[in-house]
Image (cartoon, rainbow, N blue to C red):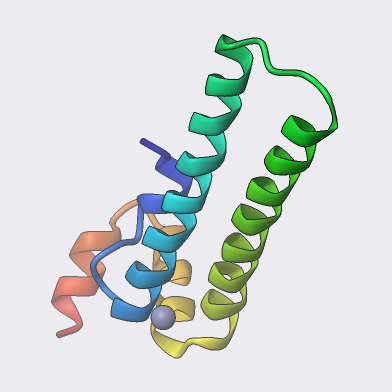
Length: 94
Ligand SMILES: [Zn+2]
């Protein structure tokens, strides 16, 4: 779905949890946005609702980012993510 967010899953369980939260928040926001567009809802109420969902997604994303910067496992995998042979290096180091 979102390549940028999912390329280093299944290594850090905290990261996975935060990632799922982030994706859930993003989907909720997107779905509501489409729904509102489809039924042609306008005005302050619809705008406020979308803004709240977007803020929720932004918060989830920030938590995810903060985690990757403070977590040793995630920092390590981020470094590896820059390499082409991520899987090979990760496996050979075990
Ligand atoms: Zn982590």
